[in-house]
Image 1 (cartoon, rainbow, N blue to C red):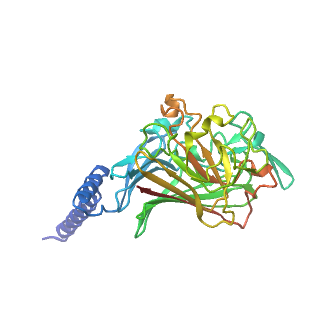
Image 2: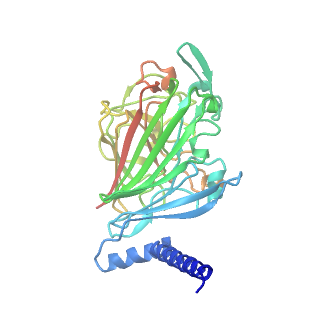
Image 3: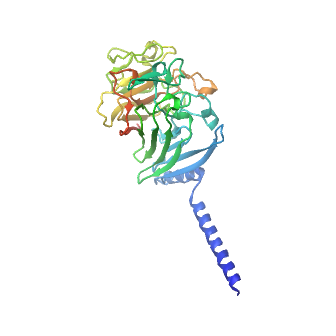
Length: 395
């Protein structure tokens, strides 16, 4: 055999070996459908499903950016779906008292629904969630003007907030959790905010059946930062309204608002008002007493825990399915929204009013203009870090 033939033979063998490795690796990565089949089989046999993260295409944005969805399954078979557009939770499947898995969040079946103006279904919201009055604030003697997208006010980060941009995604897998870490750099001046902001959010689903959300951010100029997730929950599995859900909120004070839903600056007692959820109460029991248009809750609660430790903020139970969700957070406030503006239109996912509830852990609305509120200003050299845990069970 000539030297040339020998080299050619070795090259052929290397290519075949590489092809075999690729085929083995490809065969080792199950599709989402195959993973669901394996997990169902495992549950039938009394075994725990295997933990997994499956990445799949979810469409393209208007500027042709490819969007991916990440399907995360824990060892108990719970399923969390996330996408890198808006760092959005697209679904969370949990079991009822009989073990039946159902999606308990509101959203759209395809990317197109999220590309329009929608009610922030499942979205990561920032640079400042909730409202800033008239889209203006003064910081270090300078007035800043933000984009206004809620009549005269700034809402949930503006016209192009964090919910409407692509994030860099990195899969996260530990011994007892699976999830995704999303990261982006918000440039100085984005939607009117000062400073470059480096921000990340990590969503993980652990084997204790907890959805853990951790936010971190740093900035090179002082800037307001208020980050949250805007999932809409319906523990019945997406059917009916949330009016029969029983809820407890660990707060004896709430923030009254004006007609534009801007806090008046007062912290009012919940006692003797329809805002009192210190004991388990059906959401619909007193909702008609709320003086708002449309009628319903859209108010921030000042939580009992104000020291930055992880503490229970709320507990929700659906009597029909038996599903229970506990919310723990390091944040000082909890925005309770009862889905008042949902109207059954396609832009709102065709969900009727009160189809879902939001429990947005956060700093207080309009804090940059309210000196008595806990500060929401992040300064250079500091790190913004907040954690929220949603704990799921059924009884």
